[in-house]
Amino acid sequence: MSQSPESPETLRVADLPQNRTTPFALRPGAVALQEIAAEMELLGLRKLAFQGTVRAEGRSDWVLEGTLGATVVQPCVVTLEPVTTRIDVAVRRLYLADPTPILPEGEEIEIPEDDSAEPLGEVIDLHGVMLEELALALPAWPRAEGAGIGSLSVTEPGQTPLTEESMKPFAGLAALRDKLGTPPKDED
Image (cartoon, rainbow, N blue to C red; front, side, top):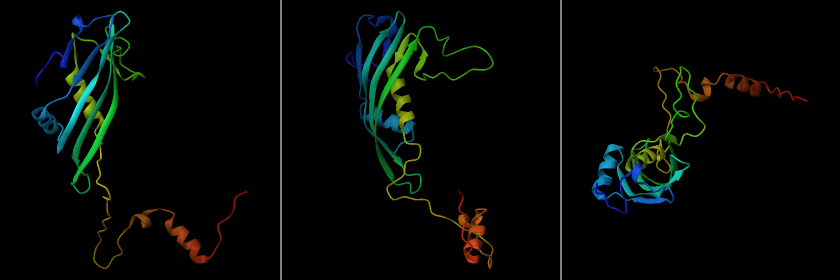
């Protein structure tokens, strides 16, 4: 993937200005889109864009805020037909120079409320953040319109197959009650 001054894929923290925001914009080309699609096992990836700003937070921490937009094509989990999904998500990362609050030592570790915080390194990897956010935003179970899961019943010849309804423990009691014509009791 090519780097240009307007849209670098990594930002060296030492070079970032403390008193103003640093804008960024990543728009991978066609070859890069194919590589990302193959890596994420997508049928297709179109219009991937990641843009925003990085700014100082206090004396030594940094905040990345931006938006990620993409059009992805995945196989339907039922029919394997292509399913196209538009993704537009807000992205926020807080890079902490002292990661003690997010990486406490000890046997028991609580998950922090703010899951956008991570340790600050020498560089902020914009390409890595873009890929991670895209992976998190992908639909876990893409389903084509109208696709549904049918039912399957298997049994020995001459036997009544089990159904979901017959496996419910009180289904038989409700049917017996209805057969006997006993009205259900009203509770006051």
